[in-house]
Length: 447
Ligand SMILES: NC(=O)c1ccc[n+]([C@@H]2O[C@H](COP(=O)([O-])OP(=O)(O)OC[C@H]3O[C@@H](n4cnc5c(N)ncnc54)[C@H](O)[C@@H]3O)[C@@H](O)[C@H]2O)c1
Image (cartoon, rainbow, N blue to C red; front, side):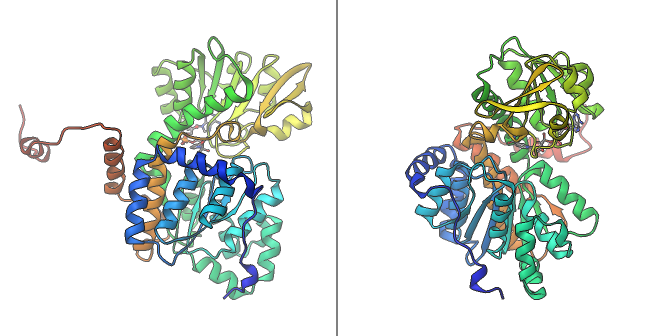
């Protein structure tokens, strides 16, 4: 057993911001009817009673509503940030003051503090972990595999103070985990493929009620929102280059076009490229898009998608932003070597001088929708976080029987979330007649 000394309290910016956080969280709650119903059921049934849950998520109003629902289900929740720039400090204060939830997150925290906060969430000794980008699970696996040199210093220093038995208990104590985003799921599937995954993981991102809506409509709208808030750019008539035509990319391309932009798409997957072309966008390689774009947005989950050779070809005044999970999609390290800067010209806008031209990079290449805007609208997070809450319950119910692999929540639960969302929106649909049911189940009825 670990000692009480390893058990932390909160680390947030300012508890005095709690009133504003409470007001804003209540506003988001109005748009989260599915999660509300789950919270009410959880409060009665207490499916997470006695479970310690560590969540590494963007600390936003929607996440606050999820944390409260998990707590209503009986979980003892600790929350840390999944990105140094996405924390809403008022929300963190509200959760600590009004719900007694442990929160380790400060907007703009440096690299060391970010990992110190992940360490604090791990020190909660979770039975269940909840990730957005697999940082908690990643750290737990470095501990399990004794790869301490691969841990960030604040975590490594702490782990070195733990006995071998404590380290083992930290990992074996986890019954299962849930993962919110595409990038995290890719990492986890790679771990399962390598045979190193230590517990089952529920890929919330793989639920249809998650990626079809959150990634597409949530990222689409909030990415445009973040860019406009950061720059006050007139989108109409501009040329916008969208890197990646997955769920996020197509959502953003749709909204950019809706705002009047000429949209170019870059892809590496022929199927996605074909879809983009037939959806009416012009598909070109990045080298061809570079001299044409006024605004470049990466949504790929890949590394160095925009490189210095592309930046050299860009127009004076071009704006670069990322909405993929990590800040690796725009090659800022190489830009730093090749260019002069940065000069902060507005909040979230850095000016770089390259070959006599000015380029503007938004939010250090971090998720622009969470850095400069508020992340996704609550209505779409309602479904994502209903999936998270059900996934946590599923881990408690089925964790012991699930293999050490990446799983989806059962299709029936996914459909149930869609049904509840439609009901809350006041949308009715038809049901199969007996004749239709029979027809669909038969193979011998033809013309
Ligand atoms: N901003 C947000 O709030 C938010 C929300 C959800 C997901 N995400 C993140 O956004 C990223 C994309 O997620 P998704 O669900 O759209 O993934 P996805 O797998 O559906 O789409 C990614 C697309 O990028 C393409 N791609 C990969 N490398 C490329 C390259 N070099 N050039 C051009 N295209 C390339 C892939 O072929 C694919 O079509 C992930 O990192 C995910 O975690 C962000």
